[in-house]
Amino acid sequence: MDIILAKTFLEIMSTGTFVEAARRLHITQTAVTTRIKNLESQLNCKLFIRNRSGAQLTREGEVFSTYALTLVQTWQKAQDQLRLPMNLTESIHIGADISLWNPIMIEWLEEITATLPNINVHIEVDKTAGLIKKLKENKLDAIVVHLPNYFSGLVVEQIVEEKLIHVRSTISSSPYLFIDWGDDFKNQLDSVLPLSRQATLSFNLGPMALKYILKNGGNGYFRTRVVEPHLQSGKLERVLNSPEFSYPIYVIYQEDNMKETLPDVITCLNQSFNNNNSWLM
Image (cartoon, rainbow, N blue to C red; front, top):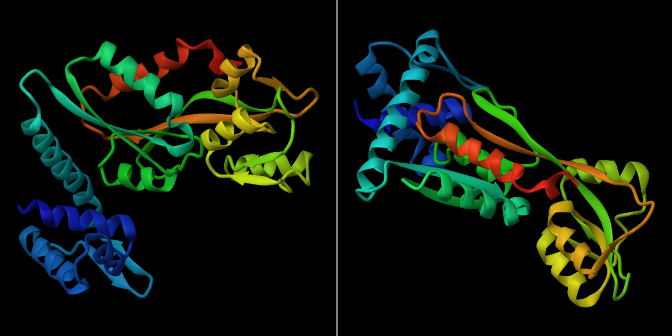
């Protein structure tokens, strides 16, 4: 069977409509319809019921979904395997949210290369929504985020509960910088410091805000693991009596992922945290 038909089926199942599937696949809706009719003809059954709300799986479609996913994953695994150099056994694709790549991804990669030298590792950094999309499309095997999405078929495991703490430069404590650490952080912050977002400067990227404070002075909320070296060196100091906020970190992967080394890769992530006690400070 043409693997393209299975991919088209999965795209409709994921999006819920032929129109959205066509948009994501960069083809016409007519082409999507033709592919599904071809697939249904080969399987001798109807896979979708189309109505005003979109496309719903039939009983046969629900049964086929598992096989379609297996077909696509097997095909992708074969492609990855054939591209690998002779000394490597498998390819793993991992991703991290933009706010978490440093130092999590670096330390995770170091642990993987030290423990699993015979696998090929592909790394991506993106916003959480983009990572989730690629994970559901089987373009990524595991991702690290701080705002999990509990979609069916995804395994969500909390790795560590980091903190966001209020620090200031020892050169100058002004201005106040607001860093957007996500909706959970903003809700927590608003509950205890209602005017906290009225800042002179606002950032949606923590590393940029930290670089500014270290060079020019100021204060704001940052992740404990990132600011710890600067606290120890005396460049930063904690703002006494300021509230702390929880900032849990999660790893997410497909429940039916067939990569043999994925469990070892997840173990490497956990080990990278265990090797750095400052994550728990």
